[in-house]
Length: 385
Ligand SMILES: [Fe+2]
Image 1 (cartoon, rainbow, N blue to C red):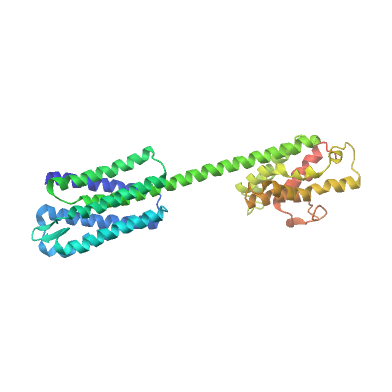
Image 2 (tube, rainbow, N blue to C red; image 1 turned 90 degrees about the vertical axis):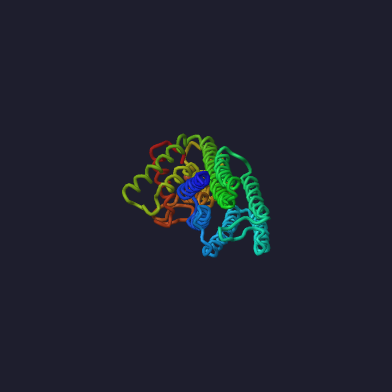
């Protein structure tokens, strides 16, 4: 009995280690944890019942409650397996898993009255003649689930071997008492292993998806910043007299927004995200100058009224150009923010600006900040117009 006690204790310890791990480190949702707890408790109850029998304190009157406990365990294990295979998106695997367990139930129901699977005696319950078929269903479903999971995860990594090693230890610990004492702890171990495998792989796959998403997001953000700085450079190189205008105005808008936030102005709009967008997209404010001819853009003297009207077009056009350029590589919030800056940075508080003669707070805050930076820079530098 010492050998039995040791192996049982090993199983219990490993199971406890795994449940602690799943509960505190797996990142499973609360409902997933409830399912896990349900199967864990039912398996523990069954394991204790079995343990009681094999310690020699079994009473025939316990036959019915023990059968109920065993049935609960048989019912909950496949439910949980199917649930997690579904959670993994393995709908086909979940169906096959269900079919295997259905066959297993059919076999159990048909064979049990004849004592072919297991039967109760005055001394306890024992294996029937075809108990191995019953066990084979568990093994088949376990193997099937593992293959499905490996296919789903699409690769093997070092950490997967850790999980499999833990599962194997439980399996071996479960099978050993069977060979020595003809006890059938193995099916408990197999059931819990199957469920734990699903939980672990579910967790690993979720982590993978999150890491991949974060990496892609970073790539997209870098791409946006590169495209914007490339465009800004093109504008700046063409409009040579603006010099470092783009670099300076970007710094001013950031400074203005930071100060406004510190002073408690527009704190409902100005946050870190707003400031980052403003700083990143400010270089595009004069992108509409792409439609203004070199003759006007580089004219050294004062512009005629007609030429100035032509120059004024750059703001209205800028909004559309930004949309055309960023469409498909940025989301709507990003595009709208850039478009507002390009289109409304020449509007004035009193409504005398262009292109839409917007007044006061009708002008987007981003464009108002851009306007202040733009005018300030024009006043302290030499500009054509
Ligand atoms: Fe402008």
